[in-house]
Length: 193
Image 1: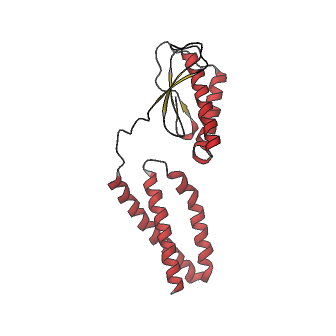
Image 2: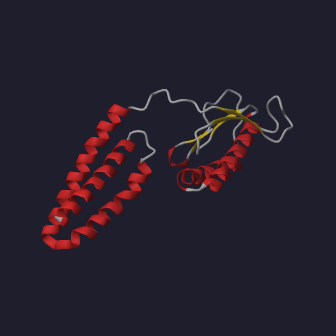
Image 3: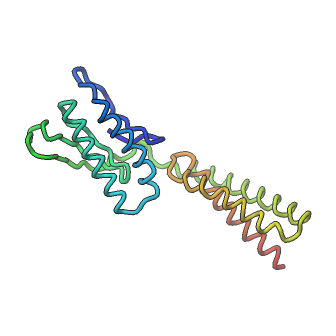
């Protein structure tokens, strides 16, 4: 059981003889997925702990319905827990049994060379674009290029922040953020000289 993009809860592989989840449990999983997708990115440690515990509880209920242990992938840390519900597994009768496994290492290493190349390209693109836009705006409207440029940066900031955890898009976000920062330094130095 893991959380996919958009807050959707994926139960993983189905086995022959698996029971169908009751609609109430499916609703609870859907609700938890919607909350967990936002809390995992934005909330503090207390809220993240609540999401983790609720996820384990739901994994225990799914384990009971399916009659077998369920792997639960923590949406905050990525750690994998094998959850036995109260009525399943060798320790039946206990409230909830969780065996923690170490986080599975990614099958692929981080592509630093390719990623930094993509980031450098987008840094140059963002810096040149921002400088050109600011200079054109400054030539037409004077010092109003400063608030206009602030609006551009504030408009891009949420998208760049959300893209930082996506495997490919994180490189573009890094490059764009560095490029905008470099553009601001160049524009301020040009204005002061």
